[in-house]
Length: 172
Image 1 (cartoon, rainbow, N blue to C red):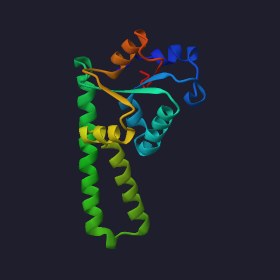
Image 2: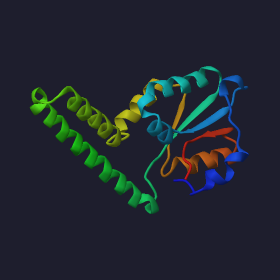
Image 3: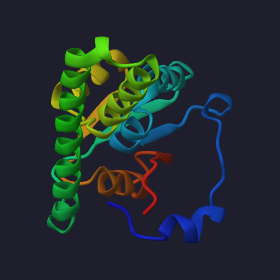
Image 4: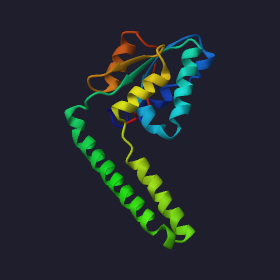
């Protein structure tokens, strides 16, 4: 959970870094923010992280735990959106299976596009996907499961100089 407008206020204070061209660094990653944002290119994201590790960087992936109470309303809204999208997707898939032979190619493509969009909206990071990601990244990359928000752990690690860089897409 971020602080609203913090990124907008401070973004000019930060610089873009290409980790491959640097001396080895300790990089802490807010995994949920990256996985969620890049879920369509998950394999490429994991290859990038493995590449940083292969280049000598020490990678620590931090996963969000239970959201704080002040975020529960947002979490519930997201859950409702996911469930509605999943239900609509299932209905459209059933409709397409039942009536595909009666539909035009244009209609079929529109329905398939809607199903794809609803699949995106209904996406959820499951425990099994986390384990799959951890397995794909391999044993050289450390994983921490935060009791609350990953941001809190990452900020603490940076303050304690356990990591040099925080990689997160949380902005608000």
